[in-house]
Length: 290
Image (cartoon, rainbow, N blue to C red):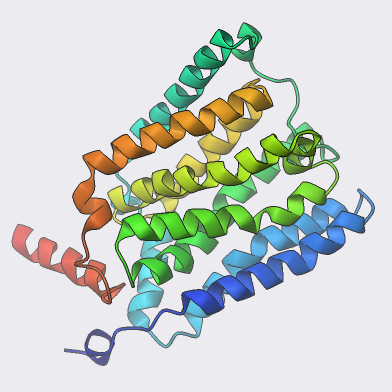
């Protein structure tokens, strides 16, 4: 047995999050005061930071298994359970529909069942906005799934990993509420909207973990799902009040997903054994099929 299997790589989640926050906020905080012509560039650099930190952690890890794992998670089309990704997108679309229907009962407009003409953030144009949500879907998942989630999950079950990740990922966006033209800044008209934004990240942490694990820890699957979530959140004409309702609905749906996938979220077989556990499990499966 090789050294990489006898001495598993030691993940460093605390150091990762410290560096991811520092190298993101070091660009986002100045963007609060920068002219709108410079702000988008600074925000892009901050967005890239977790992916850059994640990649550096993997490349300097000294673990061949970790490097192979990152490559397979990004370009391993064979890992993606396409039907699961499809149903995940459908589930999120249903969440939006139910949220709008419930909001109508409380006086919100049926016009929410339509597409918006523009995106919620300004200063970059429609093409720039579409490019932004696409890049965000790709870059964020490389950062969060390339190293971050595994670095937490290696020490606990995926339920508690999802909870911790959801909180930390949500708070990572904090400086954006002060940057002119961002979706988060638009929520500042009501503190409830801001609070809802940060709370909503927690159940979404569980949903994205479900997509991740169902496709054998595939980053590609998460990129696809993340893109559709971003697009639907931006283009469906939901009011801020309805998005508060949406947080309640997605929390209920999350409870259903966790209940239906108890072994996925509560098993501990992988603890202390990533990425070797997944790699070895895949080889054992291939050997059995052979």
